[in-house]
Length: 105
Image (cartoon, rainbow, N blue to C red):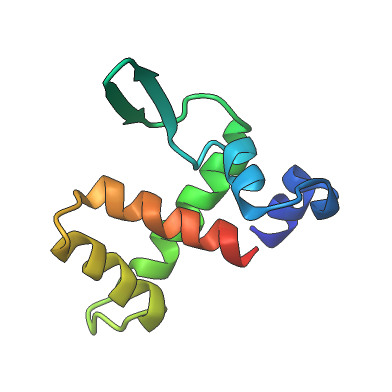
């Protein structure tokens, strides 16, 4: 997964901020605004391979595999459940984890 991530991103220096990498990978939401209304939607553009890598990585760090339900990454597990307790859906909470992973990378 790390090799695929490096291959898809290429030179990390071409992204000045994590927000630009998030936009490139399709993790950042797209805002549509008109007059008084403003709505955010999931980004359908961007690098699909990179978006899939971030999705799988986010799912990996929040899961509890096996019969013993051992937490793989306590930080992201707690962060995911915090977002759910804030009222976000599971899909939205997973997207927040993806965005946090982009910030780290």
